[in-house]
Length: 167
Image (cartoon, rainbow, N blue to C red):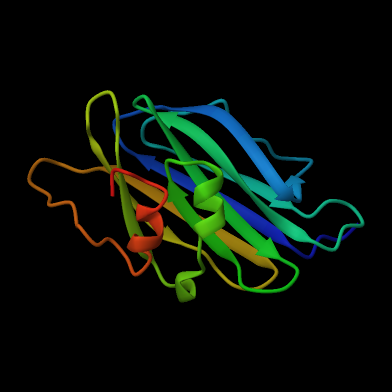
């Protein structure tokens, strides 16, 4: 069956930390038959996971995945609904991230998360696309001590403040 609501989540882990899979959740849709969330995403590794709507379902594809990064749960929310705009979000509070994600007008946006173990600031450069394939690009990097972490990372920073006490 042809799929009309695809989400390709590309994670570029340019941090010094490995990412350990914790959980995934779908409001609608599922991971593609030929794809899976890797158990570990190594430091400086890039992965892609394909997701789409369930067979014979009209709701589209929407959910999130959580990875543990330096002792901190980091959630990546994504959506390609049958109506409305495609969305992407990142934060530390699971479903709250999913509830408050946005299209950001399909422009690149930034946010950050402070990790628990080493208090490192992880910067996220994010962008999703419109159409039948939502290409969610998530690039992560560890902020260096000489790089200022922005207080207002994006137009959606207030939205993420509700989900992340660190922001």
